[in-house]
Image (tube, rainbow over all chains, first blue to last red; front, side, top):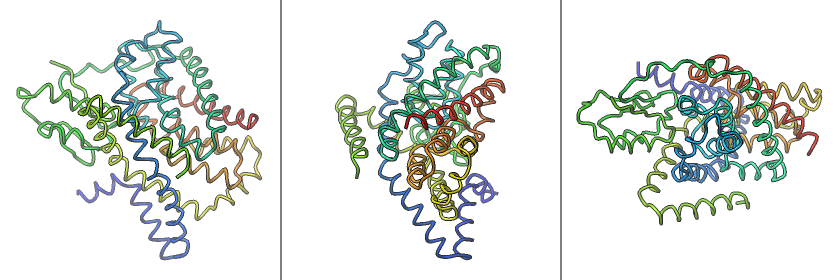
Length: 239
Length: 160
């Protein structure tokens, strides 16, 4: 059972490995060529990835996002647009990590337009990535693409806000009190388990909330764990 | 190492130094977070890289360039944008990949369209987005992003 789950969880990896095995049996020189090709990208990645992750985490830690988010309401206008860009472009994690956060922002009064700006800039305008883009495609390419993308997002978020009403977003499902963890956003980094192993555990490469004694929860330790999660997947609503 | 990589390393190390001086615990937390992100993404990153290596062996960039060059720009751009929606590739792999393609002679317009939809539009993430925001929001956001990817690409073709 666990073997099947492991294969399911890494389906893409398994397919790639299979493809390589077939390649090496049928055409060994092409197999070697593929490994060489991959080597180039691995080298490029290893040079830049550690520093990008560190930079992203530092930005995430030092920029007061909570304060910024309070200013994203419907009356915020130009300032709101600017701040939405700021939140999106410095945040850590893949785009799907942004979904739950944006839903929460919308509930707290952020406009649809600003949510779309956050999601889009989260995807394409990563500050730590700009230099990386300049390296491979040239500074001119990077600057022009960056400016055009910002303009495009400003325009299409405005159009989308005209087409959408607040009611189009699903009504919030009755907010559960207590502790919850969004497994769709979890990247399986195990930080929560390291920080509070009595409450969190890893199952199938992702974290989940263990059955624990609610009365003995250490609130401060829990809050620190929530902050440590790189994708803000943990939520605690007091009962 | 090239100047851009050095710049980002130096900048980050300075940031890290300032951060350490200001708040040791917070910095430690950030480093743990960075390590966690890397660990969480490692498997999928290596799978994507080895898949790209395989695809580029079967379809050498020069042949891709040759094939794309024979199509009309609009057709090539729309197809490139469509191809980009299927997959979800982290930006630090996407940039060297696009670099390889552009250097091999693939036009700038289709390459930009591919790059933009690669990161902004996701068929893979559609179900997740739908669950959180509803069908209408998700369809409109992804649809408009797709259109702007093509427009950005065409405008870049004119400017560069």
